[in-house]
Image (tube, rainbow, N blue to C red; front, side, top):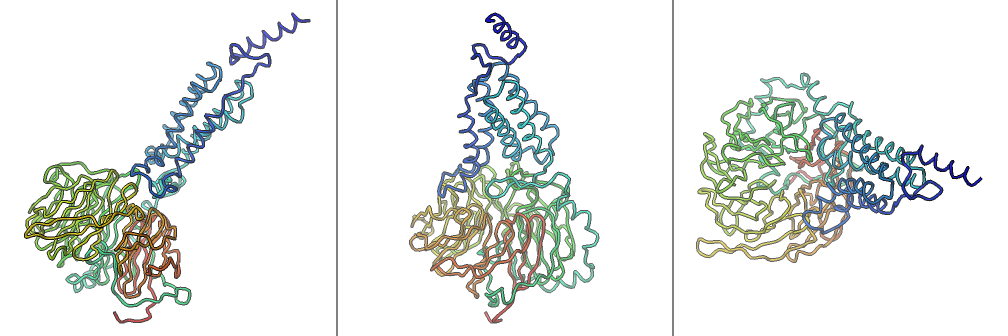
Length: 601
């Protein structure tokens, strides 16, 4: 009897190639699953850590972007080296998971092969593998390996059904079904019905170009404030009226406005496109295409800068490098230069983002080239280089003309710090070094004529510096540095001794005298803000396209009203001219008429 039982056991072991060498008579070796559970937990922590930690280091975003992928790779290493599976089982499981991933890579949409692959495909496939191994940990070897590989294949394979349009501000992948047309594709299909009559277009433009209401990025002085009529604060009683809503191409440009004409930039297929729209109808007046396409895997495709109007001229910076002067009446090219050649550099990851600044006879942009090719001034008439000055390599900020210490200065904020530049000669009047390991992408608000804010993200916070003048030289001294204000790429505004803006993804108010927070509230994602000064209202556009009105008071966070303006990821800066709100993102643009309570101001 004993021999018969022994023979039966030996045959079973021979027939099962996954049987372990020194296994219990039951024939099953349970897996060591606690490392897999920890790594799955690590995926979740990594994914949400950046948003959960209020004041982490500048590189914390990398944990959210790449942490889940790293945990996924460690899951495969756990299986191979520390799972307690048999060696044949380990090799088969590892090889099977790698093969499933390789097949998925062949089938993936090309938009899913960058951050989406790292943030979704690898984590989902490896998480599926780990879950299968955990669920079947006490099952026979062949069965648990099959379960793990089956769930891994489903996890990897799900990505083949999707396309990606980049990432949200919290580094969640922006997804759609693969078979759905993009907003850009819909736009290109329907372009013919969007054109306004050329003769009418010129008539609309000609009288308003010399005194545009919103001539540049964030308005006059780049301060993000509207000084128009007082608006009704009760949108429940007088809701905004939609004038039009249209499809637009991808890009993060805002609008420049002259009379009834809007100027912006979009991506349309293989071309960066400058577009002039009729503000009354949303119809196109003209377009000007420049060959080139920035395909930023995080932010998506398209231009980043906003066009600038000055004395009947239109200036544009394209993400791939060209800087253009156009005739704003018809979109005809006057001159064109390429920052890749002038600054001797390739486009940065985010593309060239600098909205042109016109100062006298020069148009100034940040290029980030080496040596003295950082900030560059071009002749408005010819496009030839007038002067150039050193600057940090990376900046999403734009040059800004402000009065500081009694003189006009060009302010340029980069990863290296703040430069104050003489507008005429390009000489550096002051270099204030404050390096940031992340990126800087905001305008430096001038608090008064002698002090400036340097808004910076997590790891650094925001600093106020005071500028003093001794003879012809300038000096800077730190007033305070606050870790309670850590904006990312979300500009704020200065009003009545306080700063209103984003601390991460939560809106906040900071006392400019002390740098201390007076309140914090309202989760609007990575949105943008605009001050309606005469109405004492902060208008916030959330990352999801919702418009929120806040009382501009340091006493408390008080929402007055809100409404959904457009759908989709919205990072573009809003514009209000008179009582018209213009808003856009990478898919839609819209105009809303806001009720007026008092036309004075």
